[in-house]
Image (tube, rainbow, N blue to C red):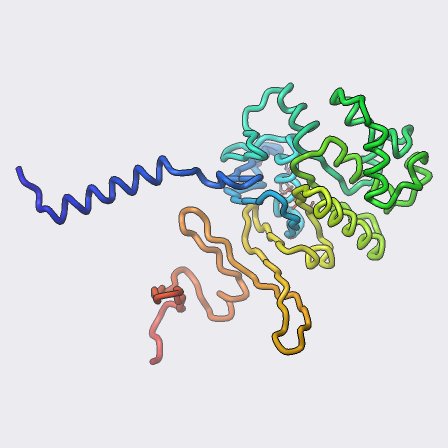
Length: 319
Ligand SMILES: Nc1ncnc2c1ncn2[C@@H]1O[C@H](COP(=O)(O)OP(=O)(O)OP(=O)(O)O)[C@@H](O)[C@H]1O
């Protein structure tokens, strides 16, 4: 039997593309953090709460980014999974090449000790009250079995974060801002690939919050640590190059900022652009302000242009 040559060539080409796609690099293969359709369902008194509903997120090595979202949108759930404290119900999550699903207890402990560092909102949760700042910073190194030079490393981290003067003080002898900077030093002690911070400035006034943010920036720039900060603080969110918003357990929009130099005056300004997320199935979540402004509901009309796609409300259009 002979197939029409053009038809079989097309079929062969499609098969080749499918194989190339299947055998090619996977989703987020070059990212330091890759969350692929993450789902986390909690059962509460027989009622299911879907905290994460197919969340995709890629973070590259060396990024300093913020995660924002309304209360209950799933930010802490995501952070707990990335911190190795909780497991997703479905989906995949990888951090620095480690698969976060199905880690055994030993592996999980090592992951938390060596791959990630975290800073929590409650200053008291970050430090042991009966140890000095230097002892708190040295402790993770000791637990990892790194006894050599731990005192020197603790001192240099405290100096880097501008709290060298607190080295011999216990947490109650420090301000909230100093405690959080020492907490960042503790989180960095074992040179983690990723530093996670959940509302680290939540209990602080705005001026102190600024200093804490400067400490994160120093860690990112001087040590190259990848940092993800969950924040409600608009000032913190607008300081980073990338802010990802989470809505109803999914990443919804993203703001990227870059510096532009005016050609005539030479003045520098930060330009922010908002992007909608396009998931792997091609689904696009349009901001409700946009759809409501144009009365878009149920379905929209798409038109492919050479370099963009137009989206129109359903119904007759003038012109
Ligand atoms: N252990 C749990 N058991 C049951 N439901 C939970 C649990 N943890 C979180 N949830 C629910 O999952 C959803 C997401 O919660 P999560 O704490 O991740 O939100 P969030 O964005 O961090 O909120 P916030 O900004 O208030 O901290 C919420 O509806 C919450 O009630």
